[in-house]
Structures are given as structure tokens and as C-alpha cells.
Length: 67
Image (cartoon, rainbow, N blue to C red; front, side, top):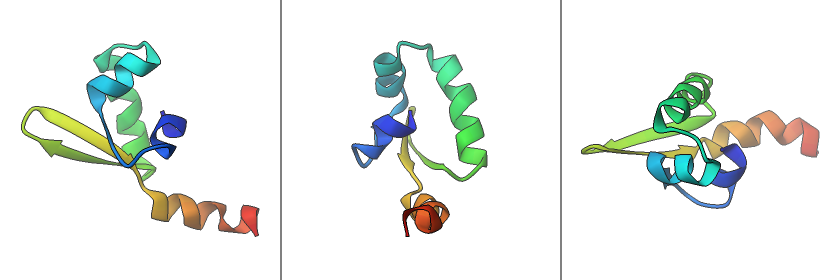
């Protein structure tokens, strides 16, 4: 999921689930964990939820690894 999101700005939940070949329920379970850790940010518009990577956090976490 993180790798998929690294290639785009934002994806909706159904699109991610379909690409990964998993149910929306399983996707929601995993993205709650990633959201709680701050790795992803969820934006809800009506019935649709979209997620994106928290690139600022990831950049800060990997800064020492890359440098």
C-alpha cells in the first residue's frame, strides 16, 4: 500500500483494495494502523475516503538513512 501511494498523490480506498486484491474491510484494518502511526493521512469526502502518504514524516524518518 505504501509503495502504491509513493507513486501518486492520493488514492481512494476501493482503488487500493482492488489493486491489492483485498477486501475493503481488510484494507480499513491496515490503514487504521498506518494512520495511527502517522504514515498515512485520510481525507473523507462524502462516502469516499482517500489516503495519501505523510511524506513529511517519512522524509524526516529516513533523512538519517539517506544522508
